[in-house]
Every structure is written in structure tokens, then in C-alpha cells.
Image 1 (tube, rainbow, N blue to C red):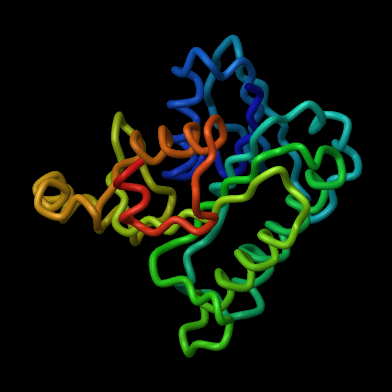
Image 2 (image 1 turned 60 degrees about the horizontal axis):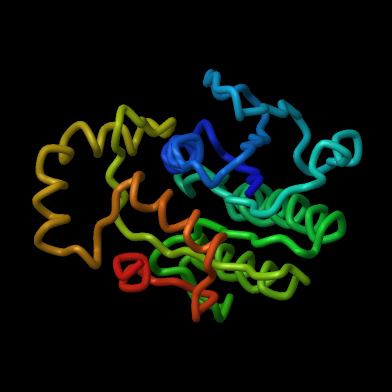
Amino acid sequence: MNVLILGASGMVGQGVLRECLLDEGVTRVVTLGRTPTGRSHPKLREIVHRDLLHLAPIEDQLRGIDACFYCLGASASGLNEAEYTQINYEITLAVAETLARLDPDLTFVYVSGTGTDSTERGRVMWARVKGRTENALLRLPFKAAYMLRPGVIIPMHGVKSKTRLYRVFYSVFGPVLPLLKSLFPRAVIDTEHLGRVMIRLARSGYSKNVLEMADLASL
């Protein structure tokens, strides 16, 4: 299986990249982002491309992909709706529409979040935008598309968030998160298991297209 990872330098993407590199069933890993990941591995190939809204110059490098793990996104903190929409909707759809045109026989796995608003009409800005993104992705002609809605995510194996607010959160609450995971397994997941879930979805599929925490815990 050949996989493409967006957001491989972020917290979730780092975890997904690690699991893909470790998985013997993943033959080739391609990362696409505006900055290098800093990782080196025999089956890893990095594509650094600054303008993710316009992928025409690199389309030939995006062929032959079996699954896309889309972990790219930005926190709503400090962003207005237009800025948040460009990062979390417009870029996502630019990538997804390109991949669907190049190879519709592809599985697209998108990391969304608990509380996403599928109606697109709620009062919470980020939830509306995420819901709009999920709905648009599910309309594309992929072999399969899965929307993942994790809750609290514990970084494992040296993975760190690029967002300062999240780094502060994990430095303060990090010691108690494993306890929370044992007490509330359907509310907390770590980057290792989230990565494994994504690989399993690409390999075996699932009965639902939108996966809440209970589904992620089950997988």
C-alpha cells in the first residue's frame, strides 16, 4: 500500500507517519507539505510545495497513491472565519479534488474532531467549517472516505504539537492523560493508536463513514 500524508509535521501527522513507516504492509510513504518533516527513511519521500491550493506543478508526483491520510489543519485560536476556512476547508478540498481526479480508486481519511457540526448551521465557527469540509469530502468520488472525530489525543513516542497552546496543555496535563485514557477509553486516544486506526481503515474499511470516539476506540 502506498500512502500520502498531509500534515506530517504536526502532532497527529507525526504519529501517523511513524506508524506508516513501521507498518510492513505500507510500501511507500509520501508526505506533502509546506515544510520538510526532518525525517529520513528508505520508504519515505517528501514533497515540499508552498502553495497547497494549486497542485498542478506536482500532480505527476501524486499518482499511484492507495490512501491519503489528511492530518493538516489549524486551530481556530486567533483566526477569523475566513482565515480558518481557507486552511481547513479550501486547502483540504483543493488537495482532495486533485486526488479524486487523478485516482478515484483511493481511500481518503480525514482527521476532523469531536463536536463537528454536520448541519453546517451551528453557532460554533470551527465546528461549522469542519462539518462543511466533511460533507464536501463525502461527496467526492473516492473508493472510500472516512471522517475521524477524535477527542483528546495523547502524543506518544516523542511527538510534539506545533501549536503553543497545545504544548502548554500537554506539559500541564500530560502526566494525568494516561490515567484519563484508562478511565475513559472512549474519550481519549493516543497518536500511535490513531495512526493504526487510519491504516486499518485504508486496508479493511469500516461500516461507517463518520467515526466518533466510540468507533475509534472499537477499532
